[in-house]
Length: 516
Ligand code: HEM
Image (cartoon, rainbow, N blue to C red; front, side, top):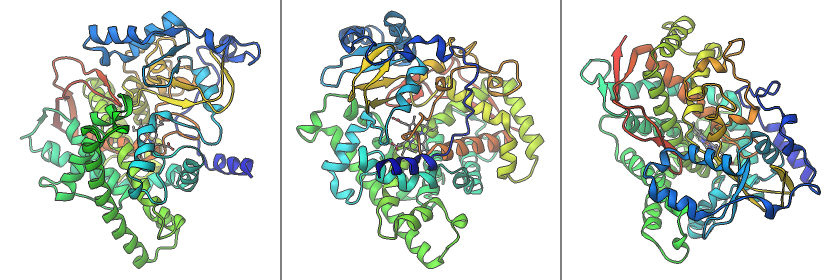
């Protein structure tokens, strides 16, 4: 029975569009001996090198820019200890840190049917205990582990990851992107040619896109005078996704003992977002019933979920909450980094503009045309490689395995700083340079990195379920922007990454939008 279920879900998993080059990796499997050791003959767990927490603490206190150099710090730690080491953080489970993509491949390929992401523990506790009243049927993807997680994932997976599902939104996302440009640049009238910081606008853009897809509504977040719902959604999402979550997730869990201010702030904002999204979903359910759409190809993602889960199911609501939680600042910051990379790399920007002009001209975007835009996708990958918004992820191992040549028993907390290999010379030549060509087949610069050296959306059964939507949003935004404007970075110093719960720009990103 269980085996049958695993096969069902794996059949639904659609292989992501990023090409995973498996042939000529820079460090082939055979060269990485640690990957092929048998469990019995592997070194014991207690021999894994340990990085004392106090060293990190001292480092943190000595260097104020520590969070801007996260990947450099971990690079140093791996140089000191090798591809695997242990970190004991007081009050937290000891974590094993991995560096080599081959170990990560092994970890994720042996993740079992229900991978466990320990990083979601605050959300699990919040949704399953503290505010169970808001989650009567399911705590959703972000709030569940094990069988409970699988129950939701197996219902939403296919409709979310099928490329057609995202492409359904080409027109809507084009409209949302045009509205952003109108709001941000003033329709190219020249009066707002320099936008002092694109990030807050891009945050509103990604909120609007998520609502368009998962609430089946435009909430008006890009209006000059946003509605009360839109204003509340913008304000509350900044709290729900802001520093309080970092403290609730990684700080000393005082919220388990009493209602801390952080918990209070989070809870109030979350409840308001829940009320707004439930209202829009109730309206969408009514419309769906009245319009009586029966052809799944004509259904929006929300309608598909209502259709599949039943009109009384709460899964569509919880999926929307998950999308609002996981899809706003990830996509918004990815777009901000992309704007920065384009604006500060005029040559590559021009190549992309030429591709857009050649393939699209003044026509409306279609899936077929989008499919031909290879340089666009290369630019997107390269920007994500250089500035990935998700710095890493964790798993609790589901079975005994060998990682880095050591025995790793079932139930071990293992983390991978995925940004490490993305920024490493070991995997990408001239790793600091913006070279979209490395993603193009038949290009001399084409990379030959290990397939797991670039997994910005993770991989396997628990990989990002919003990936298709995020990629489509970013690509359409780039197209609509470059069609209308040439971008020039106006900052005095380069933008760097600042790693919090997610990675964001370390400073405002001022951009000059020159009408074409
Ligand atoms: C560029 C934008 C995005 C990036 C880089 C990104 C990255 C990721 C990564 C790496 C994970 C796996 C985390 C882990 O294993 O611990 C993840 C999970 C997830 N993402 Fe995204 N994401 C993005 C956008 C979105 C969007 C637009 C949505 C909207 C639906 C979304 C929804 C989710 C959800 C619900 C999960 C949890 C999946 C599960 O546990 O089954 N993400 N994302």
